[in-house]
View 1: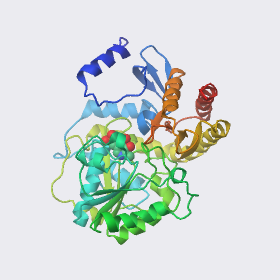
View 2: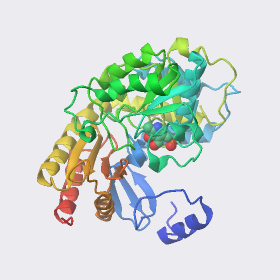
View 3: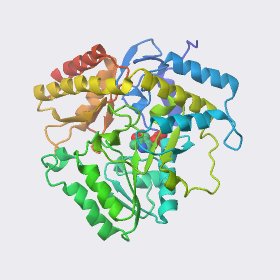
View 4: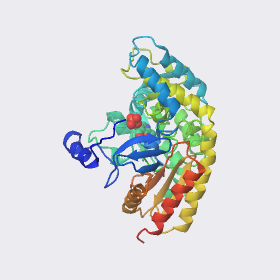
Length: 429
Ligand SMILES: Cc1ncc(COP(=O)(O)O)c(C=O)c1O
């Protein structure tokens, strides 16, 4: 294995010179990662880091899972690429496995190379099926970085395009902590969607699209009845219900897909990330009748490539075989308890803790109106220095984010909490 590395300084210098200036990275003093194994990543000096962000919810099985590596390498050595103009079996086998895995009747899938494309495809399908072009999305959502993906996105931080696509209306964030409503009280956030449809659209929407739990938006968990109310409103307006399970899918929240928590059956599901086990993948799946609207030729050069498809199939097999969805729920409860304890111990630093399964956010700042983004950055940096990798999300960039691989152990959760507690004890008051 390679053991000579250029090091972080040279990477930063080349990045400065050769990458688009927009390419964003974490940390003032970023390490160069050169290896991953299970729950850990290693930098070029051999320092070990406990990974609680999983490459932004990608490595559900941990880094370089031996069976994933074997499946991927076998396929790389056999047939890497064909495109869908030639028949090969990996793509149909994964489509079948996905249809069997899904808790809903969404048997038809289109594969692409990223979740951004998957969102685009899902929206295209909704337009084809309904003959309409207007979309309702949520503030604080993230749906991609293409023109449409960015226009759907409800986070200013990620909305770079000065000329976004029209016909998109952003509805309020269903987050009780931020609107100071007792949970499930009057659900104004859901009812507001009816008002938005009747005032800001032609009344004829193609679809509503949302993440069941917002990832980049700061791990916002809508109240229990929220999506059921929204579903009825969207259906009344003749629109489709699309769920973006990019971060939340495949066991991350303790269910196969996070929309199961809300007992709503979507018309179209889109996602990517963990399905490819680190290889690039995106997909959208739909009900039979809706899929029938997409008959004109469609193709993706790398969508459905045999390497990602075999990775996806092995990933689903291991996820189910090793009971990781159930264990994500159980281990999530341990993580939740530990984070809540920290909140009780440091009320002046932590305003809220929320999430499901192994997807949690800890909002820093004593209240929703006083975010602490600077403290978030310093905790993120210090955690990294002490060998713990966390995420950072939210419109104010003040939500420490916990999305470890689903293989995390109780001991590793305890270890992460201990590091965090130590840092918070010494945080400037
Ligand atoms: C919910 C959601 N949708 C879409 C995307 C875009 O995914 P990709 O980077 O694979 O295009 C992301 C990326 O983080 C995401 O979190």
